[in-house]
Length: 257
Image (cartoon, rainbow, N blue to C red; front, side, top):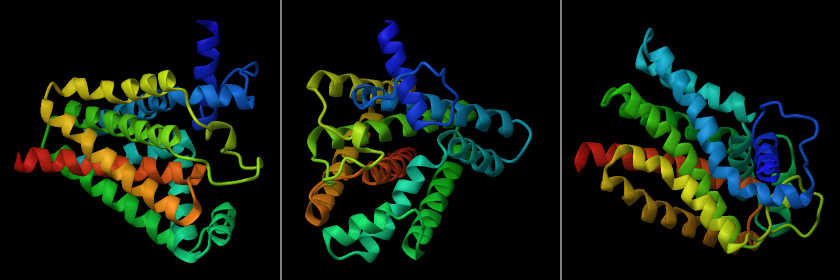
């Protein structure tokens, strides 16, 4: 139990800005094992964002509550996944060879593709959550936020399990958590990612599973075509795109089904 707690805290340390004890191990092996808790980090981040939304919605318009909940999640993760999405936009937007794409993605500077991509992604996410929040109970909207963060991270774990890491060097900060996973670890991560859907007690929400599988399959195919696999930035992009896809599906389910 103590070992698993240490592995979970390693995931917290790596994927968020939450302070952790100094004794928490961050070796490559432990970081790799901590990947199974990636969707559980979605519970933490989504839960924090959901609580902020619920609190602010009591005194301010729902649009402000949605915006501040997004700010809360970004602050808690240090824009870890948003940064990955922006790097992917820059790399695949400006590079035409594997080497060029990987070089651009590793550059800490953000370019036009990355800036525009991030703006559009955040705007899309805000509008979707705003529409969802306007049409339902505040607690349901908060649960949607938690589920979105959790299931989108499960989709990133799915890519780790099935795809190959694209970089040849060991210098990338994402390398320790970007290796092949054991099947049992993968199943645990997926179950953790899907558990929040049970809150809605509506089988329609299970439609999110095939939709997100299609999103993952497309992104896997795209990344493999251009760079032969994925990087840590690609995982961030998968998380962001999957989160938005989930919110879009929820909105469509409530409006048209």
